[in-house]
Amino acid sequence: MEEKYGRNIRLFPVPCSGRLEPIHLLVALEEFADVVYIITCPEGACRYSEGNKRAKKRVEMTRTIIASIGLEVERIGMIIGSKENPISLADHVRVAMERTLKLPPSPVQN
Image (cartoon, rainbow, N blue to C red; front, side, top):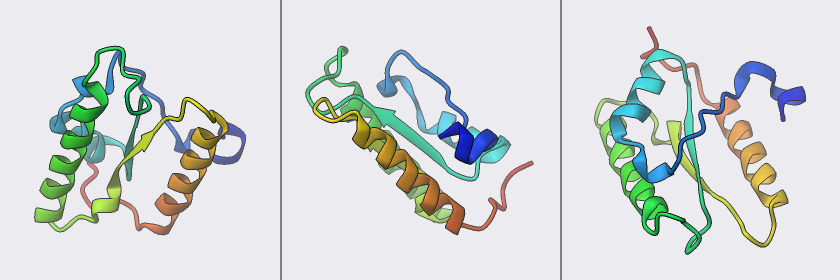
């Protein structure tokens, strides 16, 4: 991925995707990102039991917020990992990057 997209992808590991709040996603959009994706554990595989479900709700909430201010909801997304096929994670990231490249630059960055 890095060879193809270079600095266009930034990873910020967190102990659990469920710890992220909408404000974290909104600040990322405001400060440096055109698009923010959360990569979560596969369904039923969260070591904190509900983290990926919380993350999904927070992504939906953040999408509602950005839609209300006129931004494309595609600027916030979620990729669910796969226990069976880790290669599919790379495919999901590739597809997300292709979608991202079709969007105009974010109008809200400082």
